[in-house]
Amino acid sequence: MTTAEYSLDNNALFSDDFHIWTLEWTPDGFVGSCDGNIYFNVSTNDGYWNKGNFDTRIPGSDNPWEYGSKDAPFDTEYYIIINLAAGGTNGYFPTGSQSKPDGFPAYTQPWSDLSQTAFADFWNSKNDWYPTWKATQNRGESAAFVYQYIP
Image 1 (cartoon, rainbow, N blue to C red):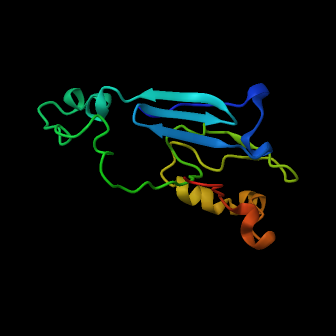
Image 2 (cartoon, helix red, strand yellow; image 1 turned 60 degrees about the vertical axis):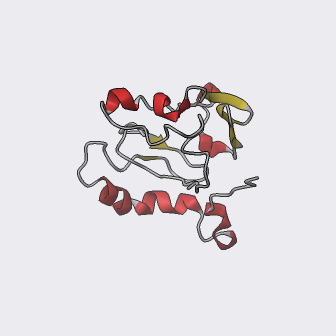
């Protein structure tokens, strides 16, 4: 419904440079872009209940947004949580992926998607990945997830 994959040209790595990620949310839908390249465009003209296929996925369920606008449930006050995740066992990082951080030795993803201990596998390899975060430089700002602005 609201996800899409995006890769850089010529197999470039996202870690090679900073990137400008944009999500424009209007009454008509969402447009996502990276460095000005649109990779995601979703219309919400038919409403979120239909967009989520809830009648098919949960037959006989009641639409709690039935009397709202097409933007329901987002037509009332709410909060957005923006986060950054590292890792996961959902296929976003194929098992065996390699990181090649500038100025550091390359290392292979320290967990398998099938591992029952993926979180521990990740933590136990911290000597490989943690130095690449440069957390001790510039009061940790080199490792920060930075928002330029949220209007």
